[in-house]
Image (cartoon, rainbow over the protein chains, first blue to last red):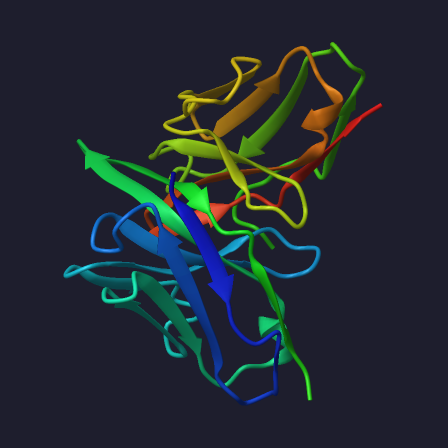
Length: 124
Length: 110
């Protein structure tokens, strides 16, 4: 059974870098796609970006200039770094495993396992 | 503002059938497959439906999904108190080149 657990500081000061780690058990981080999603209070979820080992990354254009997602295969972990944080980045941050395929131009993409999420507040 | 549109709330009594709608556009719902998630605050969101109408193992057949054009729906039959949760739809968006979500529907079991 795949399990994901987010960890990191619960509070970040404005203009600083928000850094989170997702520890994966029950599956190798070298397989599949892995993603970060966040949800601000009262809003729907927002995709941040995804990564696949050896295959690169893809980020939400609205965050692309500030975000880096990386893998540490020795620890079976995925990391998120979001620089120049503002109050608008206050949210619950989730990591998730992604299933992704494209057949005849139709994309099937879904998150089949999620972490419980971690609340990050951007405040001085 | 979420890309996909869902009603903010829905309700039903135990045993009833409830449907939750999700609408989008040609670049997302109209072109790609849809997934649905159940979320109880403070817990990990749970995949309910993928590929429009497929249930992962362990999800009761009381949950079903369908899609037509740029709209989709999640149906829950035989409503139970433990179904009270937030429900989200999601799909791939060709314009964004990434996944998009609905704003969520809070289901209340009366």
